Length: 220
Image (cartoon, rainbow, N blue to C red; front, side):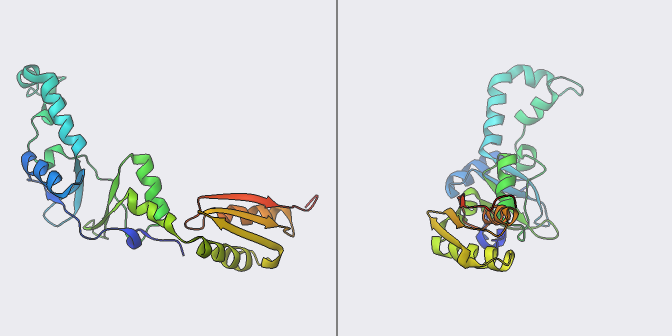
C-alpha cells in the first residue's frame, strides 16, 4: 500500500501565532534551525506560512525603497502602497505568505511531492478536517520512501502487480531490483499486458526507475 502523508510527517511542529513579532520569528528560526513556520489563528487553524524569504523580502524592501516608501506608501492608491505594507510589516500576520499550501494526513506521499514541486516549497503543513495543524511534512520526509528495501519492492511487483493486479503468471517474468531501479524481463501474453505491467511498476513505492527488457509477442 502506498505511503500516506501521516506515515512520514512530523507531529512535533513549532508554529507561530498571528501576533508573533518579526524579532521573535527571527529568534525562533535560529533556535529551532528551520526556515519557516506555519502561522495559526486562535483555533489552531493554519492561515499562512512565514519563512526566511518573507523576512528577507521585508528587509530588502526597506533597504531598496527607504524614504520614498515611507513618504508615499501610506497613501491609498499609491503605486508604493503594497511595498509599504510589506516593508512596514512587524507581525507574522503581516509578513506571512497566504493562503498556506497544505496537505491532509491521508493524501499519498506522491501527491505531497508533486505539490512541493509545483508550489516550490520545502515543507507543507498537514491539516485536519477543520484546517487545524496536525503535523508538517518536509522534502526529506517525502524522499524517505526511497529507502525501501529492494527485495520488498521486488516482492510487491511480483505479487501485487504481476500476479494479483494483472493475473499473469509470475514464472513468465524475472524481476530484479537494485538501488530502487527495477528491471523486468519475460514474455507477456500480450503486448498490452506487458506495457500495463511496466506502467504499474512505476507506481510502486520506492521505485526510482523501471527498465523494460520484455520480449513482446508479434502483432498482439
